[in-house]
Length: 134
Image (cartoon, rainbow, N blue to C red):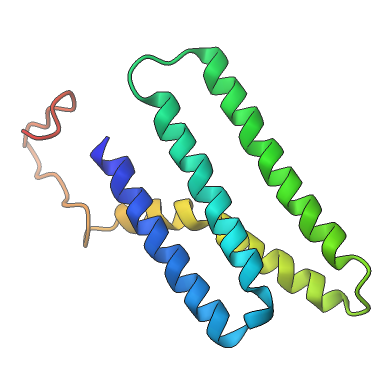
């Protein structure tokens, strides 16, 4: 479970850096980056909560449905907010920054999997997956 929390922390740092860069260079799109990152992190925290201890298939399916419904609602808000604008580049940039925000947890997992953060297991070394502290 420690790995999942480390991924969350890396995703938070990614979201903050992405928000800062967006605020400095593309200040019109900061809302979409923050909204995408927060949606991704909220869904990740819900998945951590659901999979702790005992979990049922019904709760997992409900969460997956809720996750994709939330993504669909956010994409629909972005679409309806930018569809009447004269320049279609604004809509394209909005969706690009929204997707960059949605990728916060994925980028966190990729960064966590690099050898800089996660130490590789030596060949022949015993790993007790039930007790990660050993």
